Image (spheres, rainbow, N blue to C red):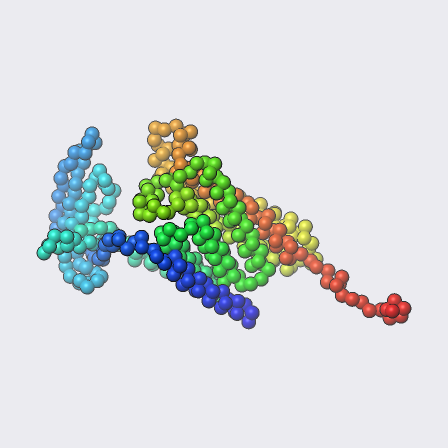
Length: 393
């Protein structure tokens, strides 16, 4: 009964956080008001009508080509659903030579250009990929429910709140020029507490996990702030940062690095913390009279086993996410010393190292808190024994 009450309370509080947080984050947020939003229509290619190549000379490059493909497509969404239209796909080899040419049966996104009065032209914009991703997502959700059962449902609820906290509260707050450092800490705290309590309930294990995780994230945050200054970072790590700065000059790009590192490391840190707290909970529950030092030692030993693979996981995740950049820079003519001093590379290295330090900090911290909570307490010391005779006088 107590577990259900806690779950409902946390569920309600999480909903309140999302609603109020979104209202605060979007208040006076005018950044997107002047942005022209293009409407895209889904369609399916029914036949290819014409393919035309035009040679183009671009500087000293070898002769390049513009390829125009005219096609017929049936609209599959919106007010014009079912209509047949004629559209064009333009491929410039010197800009986007790897774009796949449309074929019959391809599902695509179309843009209707009505800039010229009385004339409507349809253009290929991108392939429609959402359907495949939705099915993959459904398989993912089904596997969680199949293996997790009741806890799987709780996991999905916690995952939903995590996604909402990021995209409905945190991102609008950043775009609205709010304090990124403060909102990052609040978001990490919310995700940690809501996920752990919703999935695992309220117990000593939850307390140990929460404090261990928050402690590891705070250490990562402090180190990031220090290294931001030591490394003379500006936040202009790639063209996306430049576009973001042009969109809203009030956005602190160095704070974006801070937020990226903490949110990127949060999942791994939370995973390590719950692994240790859960393992120590099992050890203390199935063993008799374990003292503080015994539980602490067990926690550190468990942490050592987790440490190797989890640190690798974090570093490999960062390398994998920027693999194209790494390959491009490695293949360039610059020296290794120059490459490692580039800000974009330095930030990637910083993310990997600081996140790993956060994990390493979480191990002893979670073990310490868990040992304090799980240790054996001799209750006989707190029981008064009444004896007969003079000793009782």
